[in-house]
Each structure stands twice: as C-alpha cells, then as structure tokens.
Image (tube, rainbow, N blue to C red):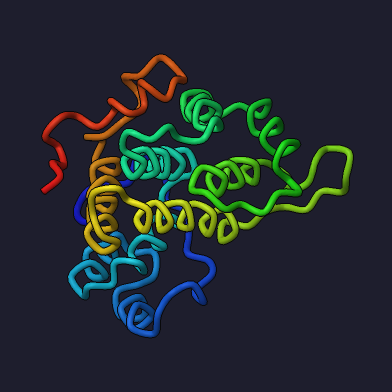
Length: 208
C-alpha cells in the first residue's frame, strides 16, 4: 500500500459491489488492484471503502492479524472472545488442523462479534466452507474479505475510546504498518491474548 511492497503477493479484487460509487470511480481511474488505490481512497475520505479494500487485498494471514489487532485494540480492558487464542495460534502457524477445528465449531453459526467474524474468515481459508464430511464448497476471496472487513468495521463501531471514523482511521494505520513490516506477529512466540494485547509498540499509534 502506498509506495511500500505488500508482504506477499496481493489477492486480486473481487466483490466490487462492496464499494461505494465514489470508490468505484477511483478504482476505475487508478486500478482496483493498484497499491496507490489505498492512499487515494483515504485522501477521498472513503475510510470504510478503504477498510474493505485492505481486507480484500492483504494476504490472508496478514488480514487475520490485522483483524486481531483491531478487535483487541477496540476491546480495551475488556476480555476478548475465547476464540482469540485460536486465531492467534493460526496466525503464528496457519495450519489446516486449526482451520478445520474452527470450521467444525462455527460452520453453522451466524457471526455477531468481531472475533466471530474473524473465526469465520479463518474457517473459510481452506479448501471448503463446509466440514470434510460434506461436499466441497470453495470460499471465494470476496467471502473471506467480507468477514475480515466486518470484524474491523464492527470493532471500529465498538471502540471504547474513539468514535467510528477515528477508530477506522487508526485501524487503517495499523494496516499500513502491517504492510510495511512495522507491526508484525513474527516476534511473538505465544498464542495468548495477553501477548496479543501488548503487540502494538507503545507510542506507535497513541490514542488522543
């Protein structure tokens, strides 16, 4: 995003219906998959569209990490959902066993909380949206991105210290830092929510 290179190959745009007419005009002019679209959307004040664009374009592992950071930041001192440890474990080691465990636990659930949307995204990161005992139904990049974006947007709405617009702006700075390598899980060695809560370096994005 911006002038930085993505951490791995970016996923192409799907689901253009997710975006506002103003965002679609920018994508038509700049290119829906051009990294410059990120900054163009921000400069146009289209923060929700930017959030959705990031969710669609960050590689899946990075997108889940972004969602975890946002949901944890928004919850403040409140305890996050119990699934946060499983999600952190998947970020540290994106194994099929964790993905299938989440799929078997959540495939019939309708997500309501940020962590539930993120759990649904991880459960759809494999070969099928359904358990192994059922026919294969592949999940699209759009469906994965919708779940990540829903997690981040709901986290912004529920932020304990900022209003929705300011929290989304903060979350987009998290995404920029993740993309540039400044905010990484790679120095973490525990799948624990307490570790996750301290992952944002002090002073990196100070609350006003």
